[in-house]
Image (cartoon, rainbow, N blue to C red; front, side, top):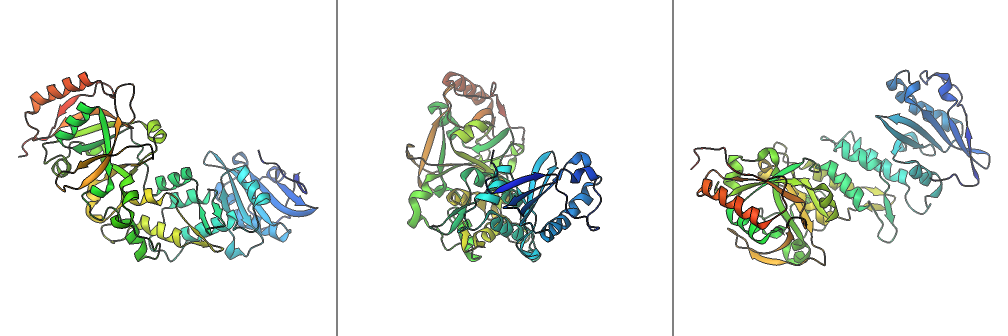
Length: 441
């Protein structure tokens, strides 16, 4: 727990001068307020709100700006509100040394973070409140026709950002980046997921007892490698656009498996596109969330251009963040080489793709294949799925044979037998079923 350093002192039971602008709160609530002084001078005022003493939450919240203004009149540098909000503890802070237009009550996630802002921030760097103010302005820009994802930006407001003096960049930790993008285009949190593929792929999985991911270079969308960067460049959000020729090593390290929401299992349009024109299989998997994180996989919904407007609002948010400047520092996503592969143009929106992505580590080995229709030479990375030794976060739960699967009834029995012999990791008994779609030829 952070401590208040010398020469600062904490005093409990302070009461601000009364103002008619502040809505009524029970009088004993004011007795809980506190201040921090520095060498006897007012430094930070704490307004402590407990849900049990609220008259009306709406009126209390409206009082916060008035409380901050009264604290400024009393000579404080900061106004802080502690409150219980939606079953969570929360701190709001405002820098009273700045003008009203440059300072708002901004959220802080923890008490330690609050102490860092008050006492430990280096003066040569932009402050955490400078950063939060920049995000707040983006979120509340009245000229933004289609606003930013509020949940994602409110998450950003509560994060501690890091500053690199050498590069003049500010950035997040890897876990915080994951958290932000998980809210921007949504982590996949369902228990099950499915993937359409060919009969030959299923046979290889069972025979070799291995699942694989494949280079993003060989996907059916030719813009896969550079779509997001091209979109940002058009809007001034980046000057760097990767081409295969200039960055083939890193691009091939991005290995993916294209899946879809489990509610899209046994769907004719997907059978036709990705299930070998209904002669293939739909594999249903249980998602092992623990293994997903341990092995460094990323599993997210894809983000698509909006059909009616032609705009990609999530990429517009990224562009605005990359253009944000905080006292000469620009914002950078350290894992952009990962995130840029979760954006696609509008033509693919009806796939509702959920993408599993893995970025090659130095210890991983490539196996090279020649892809089907495109005949592109591409590296894959394989993961063992032997029972008790599983390394892959998608665990086989059910196999559905397509509406045009050859000798479906007989092969269903044979596939089940091979699966039993191979002793692969399964969720339950992993049945082999026939498609419920009839009459497609």
